[in-house]
Length: 226
Figure: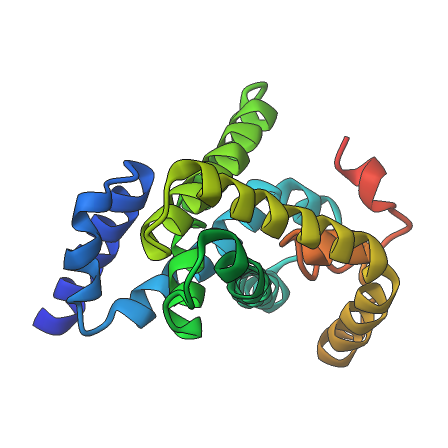
């Protein structure tokens, strides 16, 4: 029990560190024996919270019980995978820009997952009227956090870090455009194997972190979100 409480305490402290972009705590985080588990947990919570923020779509489509739980879990896993892909892009593009070989791949992956910390508050999108604005602020905060993370991990100035961050973001946008159809097909097949229901998300939705949302009726995703 003590170990669990210590983990939770370190988890919240890490989220606070990222939100405040406090680079002075980087050495503290690296000293934690469970730092990888903390980074993965933050990314999973970000995915779950983001979907909770859009849970009105789930309730419109009568997603209840175990299907709701599985959908949240899959969205959390998807968030981890998306940040891993983004980290691998950064691993490839950063060294030529900042100079040197940079840290190990897993260190970059773990650090990039930390930048999802602002999205842990994605459930706040449920707030009437203010929800969309809050969502945009959280997304922007996450990008700024990634900028700070890149600067710390690659020990570079903010200018070079910004270039790396923008390239990583741009490549993910291109991937979202180019892989939307295959990702839609894969997402549909996985969800149908689990639930027997068709998915209502596009490949772009999958790549942006909004994962499996099943559809019972004749709703279209964009209409359901209005």
